[in-house]
Each structure stands twice: as structure tokens, then as C-alpha cells.
Image 1 (cartoon, rainbow, N blue to C red):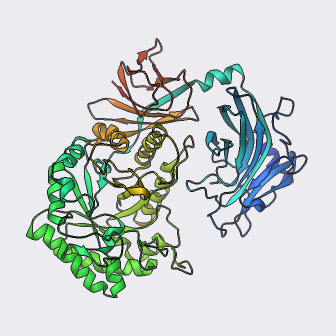
Image 2 (cartoon, one colour):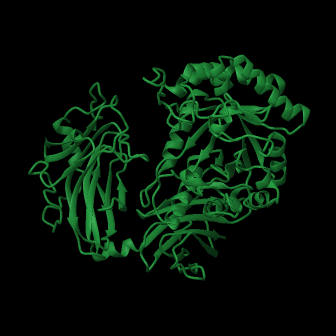
Image 3 (tube, one colour):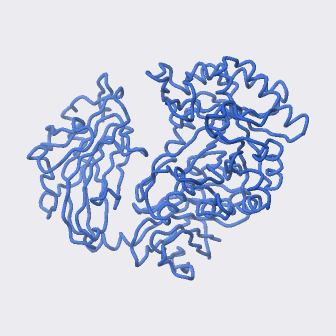
Length: 623
């Protein structure tokens, strides 16, 4: 079949008649004769019964040859991504009953529409994403109606970004069906098949993935005095520590151990805060590699990039010549690309300005110690044009920096605080792999590590403690599947009304928090080496990742988002590899989790089986 023709906006022109007939040959049978709880499910009455949220102009009804009326979503490439646009219908259901939602859809290549079932309070009940194909396909979601019975059926024609943005392209919808689940669907809802392909390894897990950010003004002398921070980090184990912080680094002067502007964030300084030598002592106690963030912003404000480069070179000399600390990794600036008027960034910087400053800093620092590695910073999405205040930079950030300084970039630094919604698949691996491909195309002869030096759940993320633990566990697994090389969770410790207790350790007494337990679940098993494996999972509410340790076990990390009290039966197929036995450990489950972990049994067909409790993060050790 010929590929759809695109107009100048990247939208498809009407398909030729022969192309439609080919597509229809693979379309599923219409649901028109089945009981349907949706009104106007085939859009014969145009948009009646449906309500657009966000930009209503995105949705319209058009005639498609051979099908009749279909719902169309359309967005040009030059239109803003910062909108939350979806098409909804409210339906009253029987509380506690299991239902099936089926939607036929097709989209332009690269666009993957999403259907979502939400409560009237906008909490996700179920979600499903289309495959990346231009052909008609059926998107399928199974869900149990909430106690109030009333739900929203939502169509996200422009997909469903992590911060609720939509994407350019066209998608089409037809023949929606909402009905009670049948017997086969009810059985499938309570079971899942997981396949681990040992013969399809993805990549090695980098030991420097399991790191944390320190904040010089919070992780101070008093906090470090009793050694509990070092003990908890060592036990995790934490393999990488970042200093002096994120935005604080662009207001921190290492020589005087003071702030460039005392009125600017973090407005704290003094001898009681942690300096370079004290930080290095912490790294030695923990057994972690250090990574330092060089102040770029203060020197740009002064109009003295050359002076900033000399200052950074002196810091390298202090660490690696005078004291022989052997600091290998150095970031040039922090989030310089995220200017907006506020208390964190003090001036806008274009991609060209950053690239030129990066070259000066890197050259001066490597003149002192040529073995160090310097990292350039930017968005995870390669082609973002940054804000310069009243307008956006005409040059895309990463392409411009690689054009001007690509040969001198040793690693690429990105940050991630994308908003998560419980029950919605994150698929962060796709974004990481897209960025990896960008790096590979720009520097085909060498591997440029991806350093995720700040990440966490977004502070606006909603959910119970168990739900947030599952979202955190899934995020870690997605980053590992995508191939992130180095990572430092943000932060080690923090408190207060704005941030809450979102650190690895409590800001009050240094005790490990849920995030420490989740990260440690991966780190204790993979920090000394492992290989991520291709893994498939046939359930909309399950995330899974498997990794194999040389001469050791296979670990399977599973996030079960279903609330079913009876649990979810998981059958594990290792393909050509024979797995005889294993154990199951549950972390972050609900209060109804059994006191003893679920059993793992081996069936006559050689497959392993277990029953996971509701809303549980499980680690299976398989041998």
C-alpha cells in the first residue's frame, strides 16, 4: 500500500479509494449489532452526546469512503504542544461490574492515540494506547466500574503526553463499543502472560544509574555528623552523588563556599553547609562516584565567560591535582535551557550562547586534567526551542549545540519531572530511545552516555503512597529499558511545604523513605552488573522489566496497578531458558498484602506462576 500523502502541515490528504479498500481488508468486524452503552458511538449524529475538552477545534466528524462518518483529530506540526485536548462522554454503569471498551482507530505514522476511562474526579481507571500503524485497528480496555458507577470515556486523538500535551498529526475513530465484559474477558482481566527473551538482550545496566543529588545547604554538617546518611546510601547502594545541587549550583561559588547572590535561591550559606572537601569525604564513605555541577549562570550574568572557565579549571585543579580526588564527571551549568521569570533562573540563554560557553569551559578544564568528562545539558526531547523571555530561540537546542560543539561533548545531561497518572503506561523508554538515536546520528563513531542527573515524580503527582511507589518503580524500569546510563535521583533530602518529604531520606531524621526502598530494590540486584532483556507483558495494567546477572539469577520487576482484591495471576515463560524455581518479594503494596509473599510454582509445561496482590511492586528472583 502506498504511504499516506502529507500536506505542507504534515497532515494526510484524503486517502485514495484503492488505499482505503486495502485498509478495510484488515479492519475488524463492526460492533453495530452488539449492546452498546455509548450514545452516538458511530458519529452518525455528528458530535451529539460527546463533549470536547481543551481545544474543541481539534475534533470534527468527516466522511471516510467505505466507513461513513468517523471522528477526526487534526493538529499541525507548527501548533503548540501545550494543550490538553480530548473528546469525552459520561456514562452511568453498574458499580463493581467489569466492562469492555473497544474503539477502532487509525493514525498518521508516529502518532499513537489513547483511550482512557476516568472517574468523575478525573482519576484514571483504565487506559490503552494504539499501536504505531496507519491501518485501522482495535484499541481495547478492560475495567471495573467505580463505586459511584459514573465514568468518563475519553478519546485522546493526539496521544496523551506526560504533562497532558498533545502531538501533531491526524487520527480517526469509529465504531466505539462499551458493554459488560464476557467470560473470556473476565478471565483475561485477572491473568497475565509474561515472556522473558534471554536470547534478545537489550543492553548492559550501567552501575552509575543508581545515584542521588545532594544539596549543599540541606545535607549540611549537622545532617552528616552521625553517619546515618552515609550508611543508608552505602546500603542502597548509591553509586553516584551529585554536588552542590541543581539550580543552587548556578548560584554557588566553590572557592569562597558562598552564594553569588544571597537574595537568590537558596538564600543559605555559611561554614555549617557542606563544601567540596566534605562532599568528597561523603563520597568515600558511601563508595560513590562524584559528579560536580559547574556554575555557568553567574559568569554569564557578569559577562565574563572566560573568568568562569578559569574558575571551573581551578575547581578541577583543586579536586584532581591538589587533592587527587579523581572527579571524572563535570556538568556545565544546570537547566540553562529552562528560563522563565522566577526565583531559579536569572537570565535567558540561547543554544548558540550555551554552546560557545560550553566550549570555553570544557577546554579550560581539560587543560588541567585531560582525563575528565564534561557534559552538556538540555531537554530529553531533542528539537525543543527554548524560551528567551518574550520569544523562543530560533535555533533548536540540541541540534545547534551538536553542530557547534558535538565533538567536545562527553555525555548528555537531561532532567525529568514529568507528571505521572496512576494506571497510565509511562512508556518513557520511547523518549529515551529517541534521544539515543539523535545522539547516535550526530556522533555515529562513539557512544555518548545519557546522564539523567535529576529525576523524580512531579510534585503535582496525585495518588496514595502505594500508587506513587508503583509509579516510581515503573519510571525506574522505563529509564533502564530505554538505556539511561547515569542517573541521580532528586533529592537526597528535602522538606517544607513546597516539596514535601520527596527525598530518598527524611529531612527530619534521615530515615529511608519509600523512594529509597524502591530504588534499592533495583540497585541491590543490578548495581554490580546486569543485562536488560526483551520482555513482553499482555496486560494493560502491568509493567514488567527483566534483567539477567552473569552467573546469577534473572530478576523480573513487575508493577501491578490493578486493584483486584483476588490478585492477578501471572504466568512466566522464559522461552528456551529453563527456570526451575524462584522467590517473590513484594514492596509498596496495599495494607491488604499478605504477611507472607506469594508462592512461585512451576507447572507441567515448565512455566512459572504466581498471584500478585493488588497495587503491588513485585521482584521475582528466578533461577
